[in-house]
Length: 226
Image (cartoon, rainbow, N blue to C red; front, side):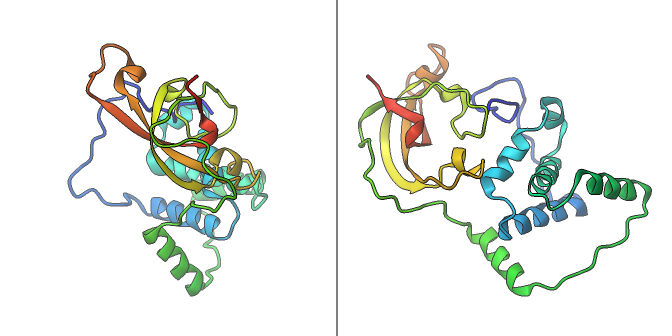
């Protein structure tokens, strides 16, 4: 969907500044938000694309005013509410307890095998590659165009790259289609391509004529150049 999260190709937001020796987590609650998100993923309560879409649905003012892990926490809350794991009343009651300092610690459970599996997944990653029963529609060197679309749901095609001419640079593995997976409609795997887009086709005549950008896209994001 179009929203404040889609900042690719835009100007005016300033550089990303990183402090030397910056810790992974600046506060304990950030570590917990990270861990709980992966616990939700590991237990199948929501998938990675649903997790992204939950953050994208935030109001623009809230999204742009949040720190990185505040976005994670907001997405986690939305996903747990959507899945019925918690109710709005329970979330509000627990929030009031934390604000007042009266929250009682939750019971602890030992799940060493689950923790070990999630640790391995976090460090090694989980591949979205899938087998499909049909050949790629496009071949290396073929001229295509990215589709012009403004979907109401999740998409991984950034706004600045829509409706642009491109060349197929590589044919990649078929992968889970996020536009479907984010809405509980199944993985619907598609072939993925690495496109080469010229800078001037993206940003106009002021762009460097010698520069190009490679972008990985799903098959349904592109169409023949004709």
